[in-house]
Image (cartoon, rainbow, N blue to C red):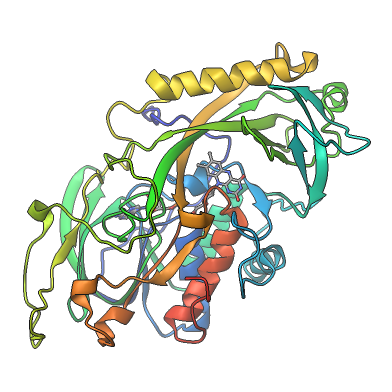
Length: 433
Ligand SMILES: Cc1cc2nc3c(=O)[nH]c(=O)nc-3n(C[C@H](O)[C@H](O)[C@H](O)COP(=O)(O)OP(=O)(O)OC[C@H]3O[C@@H](n4cnc5c(N)ncnc54)[C@H](O)[C@@H]3O)c2cc1C
């Protein structure tokens, strides 16, 4: 049977892992929502640190359907906001994690070239024409990885350690009861199953999706970004365009451009943003810790024994999540604004250098990015104000880790481990949360 093309196009990565078929459990110690780098890393580490505790990963689509399977795979140091207090060495930690789980993800760290249209370094191997002359300004730590292999490797490690992973199981709502209750809709080869799962703690690793569930609707802004991959280039072509070093690159000025080589010697180039297609209202991030759900989405209930005066526990429902993932109507990389962005990118690539003028494009795709205030990742306990009067233990049970601002390949895996430690109360959350 031919698989229907994804409306966001196909990246050049393969995730050669499918979780073992299983029934949804009734109760778990830890439920992780989202099967991208963040969720899978957290799941693998939770089981490694606490093999006696049950861990369930619920992924609404397929593993890698989000940013992690659509990323460019540049492994970058620090965060998009630079080095944050207490962060530690992201790249060293990333390398260690891949090694700990024996994941051969072709991680190469030769450094990353920062490019600019002004103040070039003396001997820039790159000289491209792109709204001015793009040249190397400096080298920073980093490199590239095969994200398909990272995803498959983390999922395999998590499952081997005893985590349960279920695809096509979307969390539609979360009850802040004791224990927490996840309302899950599973699509089992076309048969729809609804199930309520009880969990002692929940990690929301849903990135640019389900912003109502994670309480990020007002504090973060999802966008769709684009990339393309070329057919393999010859050694002479690579030399001509200054990429013989195989170093990934990104620009410091606008129009933004980033890219990297594939093992095949094809090159990925990426750029461009459009508002994300999740039916979320466009908002400039304000950092305001507000949780907004349409009143029609809230179902009130009172958990047993919970009688705090003036405090009405509610159920948080997600809007905009469909069982087919998040590629909602009208967003198709072959049509409209998204197609236009990709054409613009392709045209730029062809004009960068004569050696690229007639290069064949093999892949065109898009993926979601979550932008946050100050470009800082969001890593916190999620406490809807009305659910958690000061100090109430219920407030400790849901954690959110998301919002890497296009800088999450190494960081998400690194912080996923930290999230596992924090969930097990082995380590505090970072000071910047
Ligand atoms: C085109 C592109 C290029 C990029 N390039 C780079 C790069 O070169 N370097 C870099 O550092 N970063 C890059 N990034 C960013 C990086 O890929 C992300 O920061 C990282 O993958 C985020 O991982 P994640 O696990 O947090 O999110 P995701 O991979 O998006 O995972 C979230 C998952 O949650 C699932 N989900 C959501 N809601 C629900 C629900 N209610 N129930 C169940 N499941 C749900 C989704 O289906 C999804 O699989 C890029 C991103 C894109 C889109």
